[in-house]
Image 1 (tube, rainbow, N blue to C red):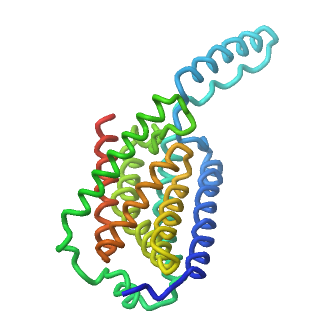
Image 2 (image 1 turned 30 degrees about the vertical axis):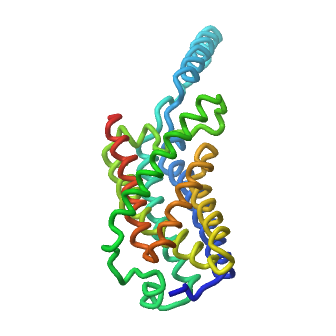
Image 3 (image 1 turned 90 degrees about the vertical axis):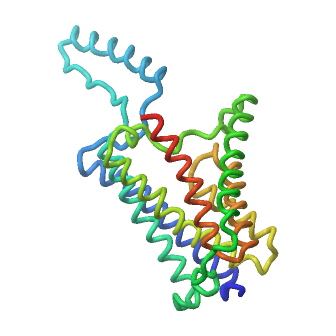
Length: 267
């Protein structure tokens, strides 16, 4: 059963999704500043921190000699409270993305569920989701190794999880909710259900590429654009080949679960 929405619906959904992401991203800094917290949740690199410490020593000596107030030490570790704010807003943004897709589709929930076959069990294709998740994980690992070997730093995937999240149980819990529950459901509903489903009438290949690229760009990292486009295309192909969006949701969950397990291993 082909989805009853088309390219215009996709454009409206994508435009709304971009606005939601931008508002959520901007709100992080605003709320953090209002709460008197640092805006960054990323830890400083060791070499950068060492350089800042050296400059701080010189500045403090000069200030002491002139009788001026000593400068404050720079912030080297990401702010854990800001990390909590960021992932709480991330959860809200994920839910809003799903709501935007629903509004753009302009159909009753039951009709949407039927079009995406969310009302049917994927039990006939249970092996495909783990296989696609494994292939996607291996592809990212191989790509990252190749980018590092080539010395193209801008294309090397960086850690998607800031250090502040790893150190704080509350932030880590919020991240787990977003990565393991909300993202597989809302991102598959948006990128595979709305975008791929709406563009499929133009042809499967263009729909695969656009939905995959949109998925990659939503992660806002130059290093993941290429591998995550492949990941998004893989999830879209899984949905298209099985006709059931639950398979793509399951593959996304397993892909994120693997990353989350690796993250826990760093603690």
